[in-house]
Each structure stands twice: as structure tokens, then as C-alpha cells.
Image (cartoon, rainbow, N blue to C red; front, side, top):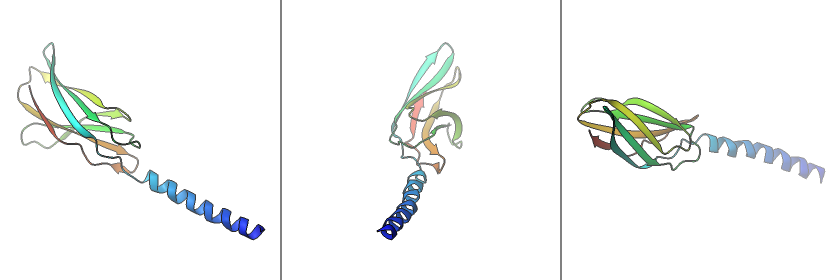
Length: 120
């Protein structure tokens, strides 16, 4: 009986850390339904982003923006369980800006959201 108990404990202790490691090694799920609304506060043009947080293991989200043919640039970061962000683009801004949101955790970055273009 004692040998069976020891064997069971050894097997259980070996399996438990593996399952915990598998959970920690998953990158966060892709955020869904990104939308951006153009807001104006005084002379500032602001992109108000909203999305659906589909992950339960993110450390936060990175906010990316581009204009025209430029590469996406990181413009902000928010913590876990956040589903919105206000990006102050600048004063008296005109033109189209495209955004995307990407979740991250200790294992890396998850897939980015849809891209959304807003006009100021």
C-alpha cells in the first residue's frame, strides 16, 4: 500500500507542474470588435478606442497607430482587463489614422485585433 501511495504522489507531483506550465505558456487571445471614435477636446484630436477583451491571462494591451503607408507605431499601453483607451493624436489633426490592439503576457504577444480607421 505504501509503494502505491508513494508512486501516486510522485506521478501526481510530476503532472501538476506540467499542466500549470502549459497554462502559463499560452499567449493571450485576440481582442475582438475594435472600434475607434474621433473626439475633440479643445484643439486636441483624440481617438477613443474600445474593444472586447477575450483573454483571461493577459498582462495588458499595446495600442498601435499608423497614418498612410507608415509602419504601425506603439502609442500606448494599458493593464489587464482593460477594454478602452484614449489616444491624444495632436492639435488640429486632420486625416485618416488606423489603429490595432495587441494583448501580451509573460509568454509573448497574442494576435492583434482587427484594424480600424478613423478620420479627423
